[in-house]
Image 1: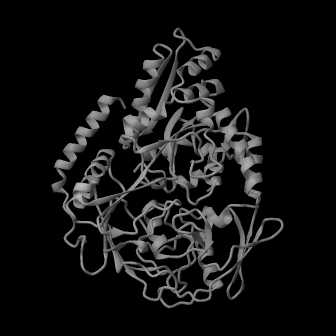
Image 2: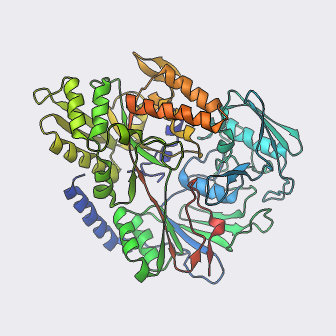
Image 3: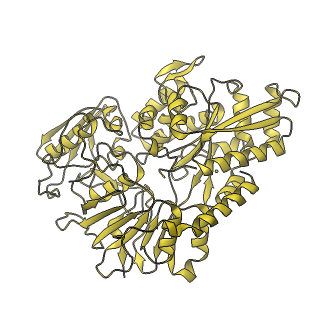
Length: 559
């Protein structure tokens, strides 16, 4: 995860929508709840499709509902949440995670890679008992074809590998050798990305723009039975080499609104409901679970929500102002007022699900620490006679971010009257993200969806910069694309060191230094993480959200 400009070519990865986005004063929250009530009452106008799955069927298939959409199932081009979930269940990867843990283990590989002394060459032994959906034997040549296609066809996630791999070759029938352009300790974790999965050379081509969006021929526990904009069916792969699915297939209905998903699940039309319900709907399902006969499965998330502070725009070029803004943020207030307790305060860009995460913003600046903010602003020359204006932007379609921005406004202006004014602005999402790297906006509310489970995915995309200087800021690179324009030669050196470091303890020490730099320089202010929820009818088992944020459909069963 290197080039955020590439990430904008896949906007839904940033969501404004699951792969998502996110919300003002108590009055606004009350209005939001009222609007939800109206939406729920009108849900009858959005009826399920005629061929929609129903729960409790006797054929052993699972009916799952979601509002997530799938633009494509081509692993070389899929870069959104829902296709990632589907590909994770339709395909295999070289490495994966033991269910319920963050322990990286071989899947199509038979062992962890042998790594050369210089950290550049990875030699990976492969399984010899795997057959693809069309009967093609899985070999090192098939994996080479699939990796080359991922890099060379020019799809949205191509840079994940093309920026790192110098060469890939089959050094045996069942031996893969990958040479990197520079050391990258997180490379085995990157190989767990859902799109880095073998596909059949008989069904796919290598070539710029050569994509097959509506099909999938791979090696996983399910085969794709049908793929449409409103319904997707997965059939069990009877010849699968690994764990046999606990169900007879998955019937997925894609809803056009949370209200329709909510009502269909409540009335028993679905076995499982996942992504995306509004806070009031989630709260209702939680309260009524016992009486309604359904389960509430709560999980964490690796998605982070934050403010990006543009140090190119005065007065954000003054670190004291950036620190003061961070000190003003009251995360528990946001959690209670905006999310009804369905979020977690975030105090580092690295989520607390990683052992290396340190709550540096909590320790240094606290929550709603207006005394500290006043002290810093006074040092920076601000006063009631010379007040600070804080301008915050968000994508106009994001109701949650509207409420968050306005809650911050009310909190800050109430605590620091006359000293700070918060100016809330919004614009259409595509316009916002296209212009972020141009340095137009002082502060934006944004979020980040990691591609694989490693702390590097929360460091380099935020602090890295290819071209720049302390005076000019980042002129080209990750932090420029992210809108902070942060530049630090020391940060670049530390990023390179932690990427090359194979010793976990030594790497953690480097990451600690980078987190300290985050709070000292404040190019970003971490805000919150949403909790993730799945709802399942009583009698449906095996439903859970993995720590890596994957959803293992093959484990779902119904008694």
